[in-house]
Image (cartoon, rainbow, N blue to C red; front, side):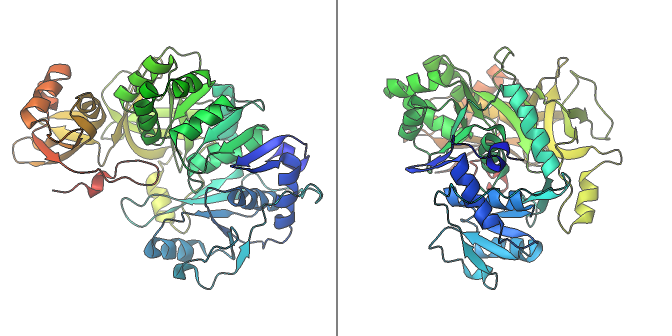
Length: 474
């Protein structure tokens, strides 16, 4: 799975601050650890560190499934993940004291020091075997463990390599957490599989991004909250704007990038930010391709090997250019089911192998996908209309008095649901409901205007920067 790890060469592989590993050094460190791993699942305390990368690489070389653990998870969530996945071993960086929820699991500290001498461990592993068990966010109940096979990972990375012209010459820069598919599959396994290099910043800071891109960095992966901070910084930092302009590719994912941030970054750098769309269960489904004209707000076309369709409320496929529908996908990128949850797996899949994403979107004649949001939280059915929260949020964010915005629906006896705007004001005084409603009505349509305004100090977000709309309650 990692050609340069199993046939090690003296090329840069990983960089975390001053900690650097070549492929030969990573191969030795990972092979040393892999030789002593049990045959069952191993949990990894997934800090943003070289120890996580060595641990995951070792498990893949040994052919054992990895359960990445979010170090910021609470006791209840950790206990659920451990009880559900039952790992035989916990791999941690040196000096970590595991929380009480992990008591009883044998612990092994990961040695991430350079090891150019240990020969590479090479084992034949079934491509359908499980590489990762990644737990979903659990917004509708306890997190479910998505079983991700080696086949799914390789299929997805091959497709992204073609779409982004991602090669062994690229140095990927990011500061993403390593317990999720964005930071771990794309951000770690991606460069290692393709033979490139990863420069992980540890913690996101615009200055750190600038320095990395002024150095050898060619790609930047981030989430919208990161790009928002970059957009806020570029006007006062010409060097940052220049560094971003010099990157080969800027990619945003895990949530929609607001249109004002798109426009601000493009104006400051002359560079567009490419969006893509994926999920834990599907890895990446779509991306804007490098040769596609700029299309802010779109997440591109299906990747090679991915079939995508929209279906209506009755489950019947919709033609391109029709109304909003639910996204369903099919292909080698799909997960292998939920651990210990056959009923949830069956519910998520159609009889002919399509995965029900729960995401709503539009699809034009050339296959370009524009996400509306989650069916459960981002689609407001008001007065007979299907209204996507995202387009209203983009209008609200363009108001100078709005720093952050979210749109939800709430029951209305006349309309079925009414549009509710949640905003974090940019100054001491928040704009009025009438002001925002008139702005939305003028730019979109009268039926899309907010009918209730809620002003809050901050919007709840998860570790990937996604707004937790289920936590927005009156």
